[in-house]
Length: 132
Image 1: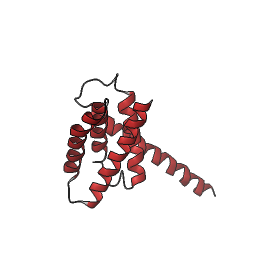
Image 2: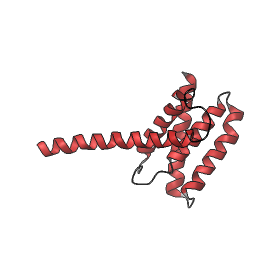
Image 3: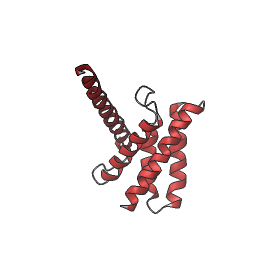
Image 4: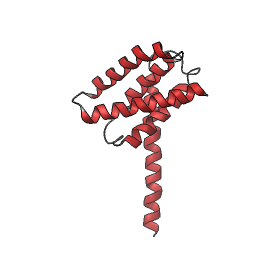
């Protein structure tokens, strides 16, 4: 349970950093993702026993942070996406084995779930306003 909580906390920090870098620097989204993934891969395994898992999660979150501004336009949204991504990586670590495609798929699923939830919530608000 501690590993999952720490994994989520690190994912939230990584997601917020990615969003900040995307908004406030001249880095491309690819460069931003590479910077986050490289930093996580070099630092986290040396600090934590589960550092390899945390580095994988940060890499997937950095991929999710590459999504378009239309899909993710606020810190709140990137934090939700990062939390979902950390859960997908953590809970799927015994199912989603190997590296090829797992991280990108996890990132894409996280962004899609967040977008779907946002659209469903907005749909409910639109229907309520129309009925009034």
